[in-house]
Image 1 (tube, rainbow, N blue to C red):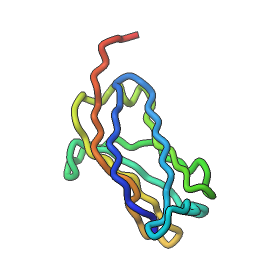
Image 2: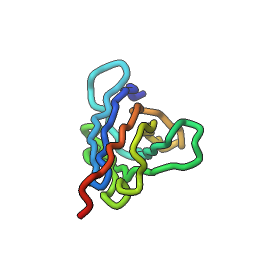
Image 3: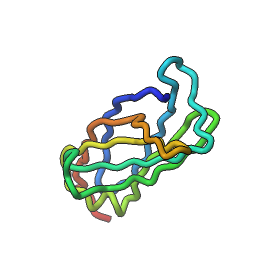
Length: 114
């Protein structure tokens, strides 16, 4: 089982966003082998909100438990400034879902329009 971490994120509207996470085991600080796992991540205004922004999410190094989530500049430009909640989940081969990261996303407004 992977450990669950709280990480607050800052996204600048109109800019490309990427965040890397390393997944470790809950009983050790060893990297979790993510071979055969899938990853999913979303953000919403609040947990019950129907409007959702889905991050692109990928495993970048399965052996070292490294994952990346991101949003394009086009997507971040559509976000209203403010606070959101997000989480990152691992989907195991048997369809079990584990939450591995969650927290608050602060979206900063964009002043410069190029």
